[in-house]
Length: 221
Length: 240
Image 1 (cartoon, rainbow over the protein chains, first blue to last red):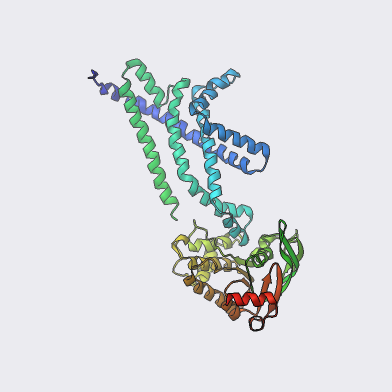
Image 2 (cartoon, each protein chain N blue to C red):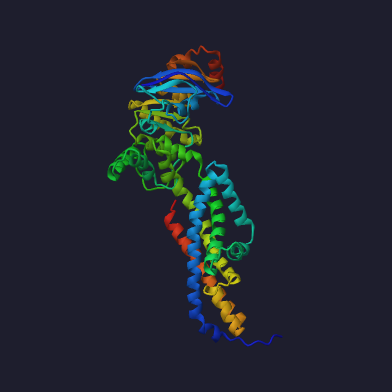
């Protein structure tokens, strides 16, 4: 049988440090989502623009973001760009990598949401005398929001979990980074990572539940 | 007055309107009957400028619909249209559905728009459904809401495009009753319909479309009683 004495006290003593790290994790995830949403809106616009160069650019972004490992995307932002003399700090590289990934997934999500709203809705608006912009703003967009909302919050959860990949580019202030440093000093791998996993779980679950609560208030139809 | 002069319209190589001439006077109710693909629905979407035309012209109170200088959005608030699929806005309550265009297009105040919306919804028998979301209602109720939504813009003309065709049979009556009510109030209407009994009752004139041509137009007694066009005779024999 195994012969290991758990030292939970050591891990629990480090809890405040880990919670500080969790705040950084949350910060990166939120920022990466913000940037991701803005980029995804632009990419969606590019794809629908009818311009070959723009839609090609957007399609390439989406393909790479969705079909290569997130780890590689973060590596490229740190070491890959470093080869060209563009040096991003671990924090920035992690943020850029995740934002890139988010934008790819969200762009597809938004495009799908737009497709889900039938053209006849726009036509009904136009037939009442609305301009194309009014019909989009008051009829299509609110319905798109509902379709896109929950998938977007799923991406937020995914972004939180992706931040843990930052340790591979030397990130040491987020939850995974802090945990890794504590582990390196104490070798209490199981205790520290188990505690970190619980914190990740709580954050992820809280985001999911909050999203559901918001959705049920916002979309009552 | 709606004046349609020699209107032609093609989708690709298929010519769906082959030179239509029709004048509808204020207060007149014209119903359009005919087989599917005869061009009758296309004509309606051309009248309010949702579809461009290839030749001819359509004038509404003297304004040419397809002229570049025409403000279509302004024109459309004068010409209401209701489709086979009612296209309720699912994210808005019944009241909000009806208030939206008066608020955004006519720029009415909230109170003002609400007053009008409540009045129109009560008119079509939905006064009890104001705060309900459309997906909680039957197709017939949603279609009546769509009619109220168009009426809230205070249109001078109403176009109805097979508004009962997508409804369950038991819901057709309530929508037709609404149309009858509008007709009796003197609304100028063009109704594309498959309901022959309804066409016979409400119409001042009935037009029969066949393969993009208006084959016959006459008051209902004449058109149903003594049809001249052989295609119309066949059509009526098949629908009776």
